Image (cartoon, rainbow, N blue to C red; front, side, top):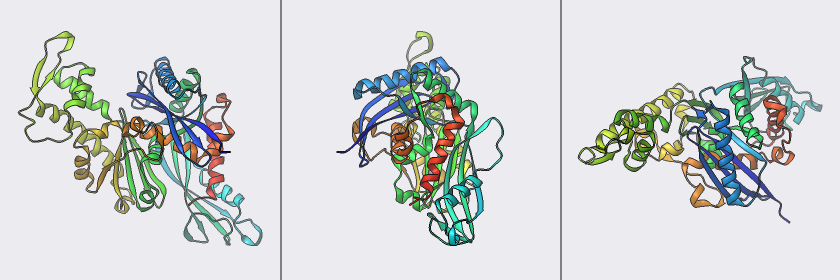
Length: 415
């Protein structure tokens, strides 16, 4: 009889909290049963600035998803972003200790442990340690070294770090809302599970998730994460610009952006008029749609230019055969794909979450890429899920150790 697990993904975003609840079968089929969202009122640029408001928003989103799915949840896989995220590439070297100089699983564990031995300030912690490749006696490109013969084993890993306080605050908010954090996952890494194919990751692809408060960047090559960055700019900045320039409330600015916005000019937009509500119940004014697009275009150009600046010096940039994939709510603005093509000078497409059944119409949107990806991440790291994380008081560092053990187990199974 097939086993069904319930997995919950919680996207703790700057403008919205999104929760997705899915049934996941032992054969790997994902059936999304519940989707819940709530306005995010306690975060700024991906970081918690008000604990109580964030707790209320999390509770509303999860309870809405629970009501739709008809289940109560405890464990959640949560996303983390913010401009405190940093990445480093580490390298470890050990002597092969196995009989007849044959690489063992213990050798793999030791070499990854050696690679993680980098000095971090007290206010920073490791969120992910992702093996990129193994090297046996200078033979590169090895993904599974177990069973190979040699004297020297090396590992190159991608290490994602974050501010201790930022991670602790997310854990605390989820706990105060009544739930337990099974794992904290870099949002761009989570999104990659739902919108990128294995072939794209192998051939080289850039993923940019433009959310409300941050734009999360991930660069993949030969199936591995090579670069991960976060830019503290997103769709909320566009909305704020509209509100300030047109002297209209934030809510009205968001509606204008969604109804009439574009990242690039279109024929006749300067002649079109749009209605703009005034502040403090002042009368409605009519302004050129072209003016609205001028405001949006300036900020979207800044967002995409800043993301390009983060990756332009990467050694992998010229190897991005697949091009660029945009996802996240702000990527839905008309003209964003075309603008990105001009800035990055490469093919660009919109990334839609795929690979699941159930509430496809609700969840198959760019703004749910992280939520769906968190579920897929949990499914592919199911050892952690099955063991559970019943004691959230163990804190951030113990959770990192638990994730690290999972990487050890998976290091011998890299495809």
